[in-house]
Length: 479
Image (tube, rainbow, N blue to C red):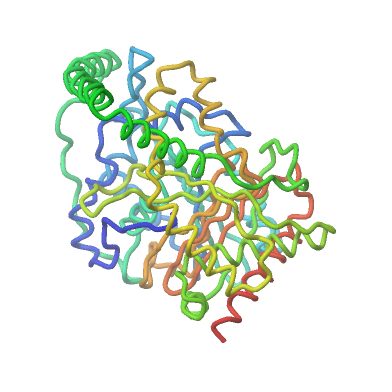
């Protein structure tokens, strides 16, 4: 996500990282955001499926590949856990061991049809990503895809968003990959799980106890707020007005949507990919006194401008949503901790350097908005209501035309069962937007994955080409 502060250093040696593998997704229950994504999911229009496509330089040995997943599933408990709902509808779900776990259900092996190029690979990936998860099983699927030219292969990792966010996915992949092509004989073994899994009744009792424990604190805050309002009514009113104004800026787009994207349904996912060198994107960002994320967003908006111009439209701005990480250095691995910020993307600015400068100011102001994490206050309330109401609340981003996520990836070369990972392309869900763009860096290369709503974008190849042109005009800033 944009502005990720990495709590977990992926450049550590595998031995040290593996020592902390059991910490990934160690929470026994979902948080409020994860609960909302889990219960409000409506396929296919409001899916919470994420995917990562890893391009491999060769097809790994299947026995070794499967054994690696068997080992990882025992090292990282979450990979063998399913969701356990609470007996009370207001309680957050928990994670429990799947006694019927079947690795051969979660790990698959396919061959793409000839000629096995990127179009065939993306067609398979988008179809696989749209298939809903079996909600009674662990929420991940991995597929080794063979039949690519020159003996190459790919790996599609599909995760439910309630498991983790973008940075958590990178952390997971770093644990599943090796720093060498050779087999590692002294990998650590899994530690035995501590404590019994919670039942539906246990979760309900825990929810009641939590609410009882929270009552004194809530009452104290209420009394304190009342005293503050009585003793300083002007200051209290001003603070409330500032928060409301901040919420309007971060939750309500200040731009009208594109007529090209009206009537979208989210029912047809279409994938596309681009790549560029991280060093080139950094050079372009420096030339315009911006960050890598600023240059990335500027490239996307440039591509959108070119696409609209080819359709005879000239728009000044585009409503966007950008996930902003709320992680801190001491946060555990995995899980979800982010907030979505709305803004009007300056699509009409033709000078890429000026576009980056404007975005620099916009992004910096968004990160200090008091209401940036206002969704964390709304999610607990939405989770108390019927799931249909929660689904409506979760579609707040539907008023944006594009969502853009940027996650720092692994800076070094990695391998999966002896196969070198050459590229990583991420694909996020379509939370009501027309285009979901996501970027992950891997070994010095930026992989950009596009999930486009095929119900309104019928020329997806053209849109990806225009996005490529947008990147070219930004990269030209760095020479």
